[in-house]
Image 1 (cartoon, rainbow over the protein chains, first blue to last red):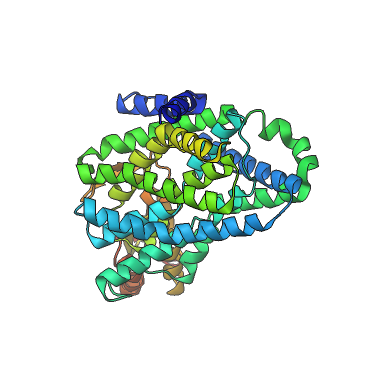
Image 2: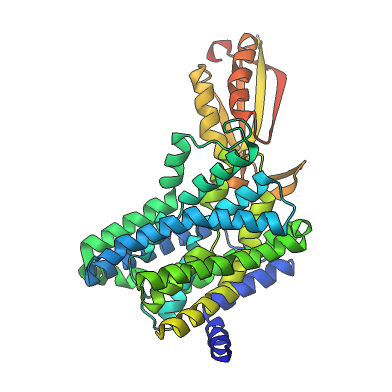
Amino acid sequence: MYDILALAAANLISPIILFFALGFAAAMARSDLSVPEAIAKGMSLYLLLAIGFKGGASVAAHGVDATLILSLIAGVILSFILPFVAFGLLRKLTGLSAIDAAAVAAHYGSISIVTFVAASSVLSYAGIMAEGYMVAVAAAMEAPAILSALWLVARASGSPGQKGGRMDPRLLREILLNGSIVLLIGSFAIGATTGQQGLAKIEAFIVAPFQGVLCLFLLDMGLVAGRGLRQARGLLRPGVFAFGILMPLIGASLGLAAGLLLGLSAGGVVLMMTLSASASYIAVPAAMRVALPEANPAIYLTLALGITFPFNLTLGIPIYMAVAQAVTGG
Amino acid sequence: MKVHRAKRVEITIEAVMERRLTEALERVDVTGFTILPVSGGSGRSGKWSREGQVSRAAGMINVVCIIRPERLNILLDAAFDILDRHIGVVNVTDCEVLRAERF
């Protein structure tokens, strides 16, 4: 246990995590530090392109095996199951209504691609390899949770289509083809097609500057998370706050079990844990506003962005790394 | 200069609903409208600001239509189908336009 904590503490001291902490602290202290919106959007596109391409190039180098398909299936199953766990926990710990609980649950079944990028980067910083196709697993885990949440609402209201959620074909298309997913999967496909030769051609753009851009991006995310948390402090009753910390740990445990069953490397297990522990704060909130407009967005955005995202980034990822390394011996 | 009576309909709605609303308007032949970003505000759900939002879920937009008075109810019926369950504000004001044939 001491070894795990010592390893977690060592992993905590990485530039990206410290820059996130800087942004978070600046926002909480009401500093006027800010990153222009267009620059933040540009950095997000860059990070998705880089992580997708590198994942694809890695798959091209190491080949495709059955574990890739099984990992995708495991990711989809986890995304379907996690909202049920989250919903049950929310109903036990908080006084949230069924609609609010289901909306929050959808976020915890889906994933945060920024948390995934940060975990990949921390792994690379620590010299730990991970399966390149985990990028595809991340994309596959984005949407299924939304269906689970809508089913939960329909069951709770007892009248599907009345006060329940609406999942029309257009919404499904918007979720599956949201810009982040298209760029991530597109870059992954290009990386897989062009392989190491393609990577060598754009390496100067997507490898060397990556850590620096991620630092600046996470500084901005820290500012956003800190401001969101400051504005919505009143919503954070102890039960809600506890959920925001407990749920990622439960998700990570399920991710750990899945990763071990699949026989993933230590890095792959960390990424599976991180994906299962993270909560969406970009794609799912937008889907929930369309499908479940009665749910209070302040609750799910504050939980996903103000509690779970900072927790995963500062404590979660180092803990997942330490546990995965201890369990796999990697 | 001669002016003509018209109605100005201003709909403040969540950004995620933009396309659904404008398509509903187009289906009833309301093809002229202006979409404006909303930088922040305060309402029943408290204060909010566009600054620092990472999700489209939290943004709002303003859709402004100027139409002939006799077409007002058609527009409102089409908009209400979309707005029904969502947060937002709809207001209608009288206005005057110079070139009536354009509306």
